[in-house]
Image 1 (cartoon, rainbow, N blue to C red):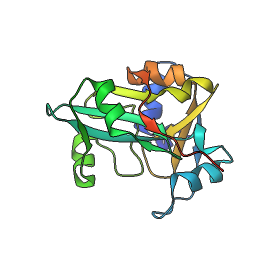
Image 2 (cartoon, rainbow, N blue to C red; image 1 turned 60 degrees about the vertical axis):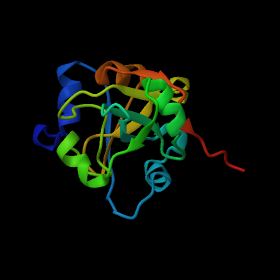
Image 3 (tube, rainbow, N blue to C red; image 1 turned 120 degrees about the vertical axis):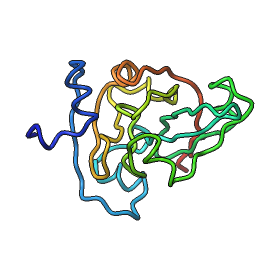
Image 4 (spheres, rainbow, N blue to C red; image 1 turned 120 degrees about the horizontal axis):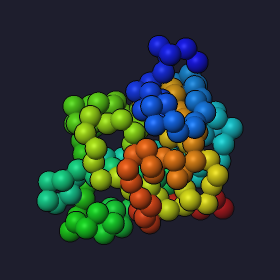
Length: 163
């Protein structure tokens, strides 16, 4: 990949000498996380989305959960040490993080917020998260993501079990 094709996320990882593989796909605004996982040829449990919340205290928090599941707000609040957390409005995302909806990554936000990766990520050798723009994903080890984003692991998601 040419240097000018790299996202801020990739530049941060390069600077920290963290190994990753980049993947691109033709984005479609109506695509679900499950559809993106299918385009990548991966199980949806290995592909994660980045969600931004605000706690009752006013502090912002970032949660990285499997695309096939959802954020459990009660578990998220407990992990963050808050009475409650709620999702921020979509229009707040870009000014707060520097990322657009569908391209939000836990790495390289305008400001570092307390960040939690759902604990199931630890069971995988590699996981996928947004590379910081719609249509781009990075694949890296969960421990490397935790190091790059300065975060830990917690039970914060509601997972959908395939029947």
